[in-house]
Length: 444
Image 1 (cartoon, helix red, strand yellow):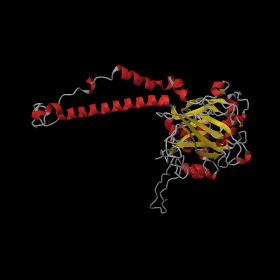
Image 2 (cartoon, rainbow, N blue to C red):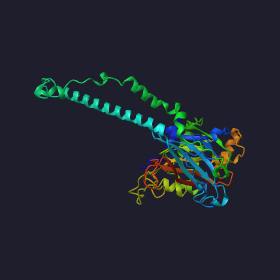
Image 3 (spheres, one colour):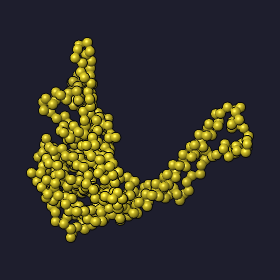
């Protein structure tokens, strides 16, 4: 079932001064090293794709479904699932033709998988040892429970712990003394060391474990002749919600402000009808505020999390459906205060369809942010804006003033939660190239 997150500003209040579960992708300079350009583990903005599958995907994967022209790569991300033997990359293309904007198929996302034999073996050993430890701990826990139960039984009962241990020849076998949990022999040093390595090597041994992944050259490939933006490194940082500034206004003014403030969790949706009458989109306002904490963000990554909606359009209504409200009283005698129910993230399977391969649920994985359009607009990719220029650029992008003809506000990618690798015959494959669902909210 989809996570039920209330749509209000209360989450920002709770997370104020803390990091969230969201990873933000920000541009981090031009990629000039050839080895990085062909390394699928190097996340990037723009450039040419570096594919994982040993067999190069068909070039039409990048074609716009509206005009059939090849599209530019917007983002490529290295994002393997935890405890999965598959190397994994996510590829997102976008069309910049004006006539294709606001039409389905002008932004497409694919995931590439490749079975990593070396890591699969290490993962198999790691999981086997984990199951062995869990089974051993469970057995010891059962023994300890039996001992505690024996100590509290009736002392005059025949099953009492004070009864002869060899009663009927079975006592020593059933109620015999067992070492306590604290006295158990620890795992042997060889086993512990190997497991520690498997737990901590995920980062330090990444270079050796990724030898199974492809770093394909595109020199003789049609992909090399397709359109492309300058390639930029995509680095990640955790999203941080800063604490609210301390107001210096008198207490009376602070109280009045708190009642009218959009951030107030008690009034944020109560005032919705009034705000809508003034053509104020509270969803967009909240989006702008959240993005403003880190204006350079181009990607928000939160696997199985909740997307940040851009505006109160049809996509928002489908992703955050309004709950049924209790009927309002019509007589004075029945007058009562009715709390306006909050929206929850609960996309239907018709709006976010299940994976067509394994029939598993698709979950939110990431979304592209308006600043990405502005970053791609800078042809040389080397410009470094000051704070004021960056703020104006973000505001312009949020209002649909980005470049390259792209007009979207955010592009949400929903991926198979099983990360399935089934072929048409239902059998598992080592190389996978699968298109995932993209939902676009266009600019306001």
